[in-house]
Length: 78
Image 1 (tube, rainbow, N blue to C red):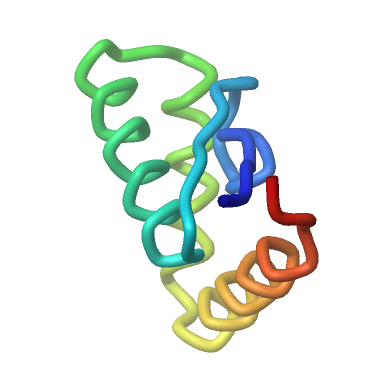
Image 2 (cartoon, helix red, strand yellow; image 1 turned 135 degrees about the vertical axis):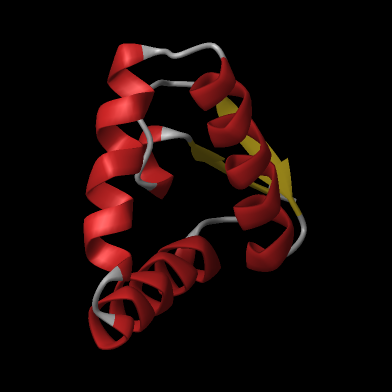
């Protein structure tokens, strides 16, 4: 089990997510982001906007995603 925060995953807060795999933690982060979007949380809306800009370039998005995957894999197991 590994832990990353919303902020580590491109978000805006210190909410912690725990998962066995990067795909699982990415899904938890995505769900949290959607909840914050629905609540119109300003800080998260800004983070979402930055991610949408990043997604305009598939290459940059893939690089970002792989860097986050490596960051997750480098974390110690809890």
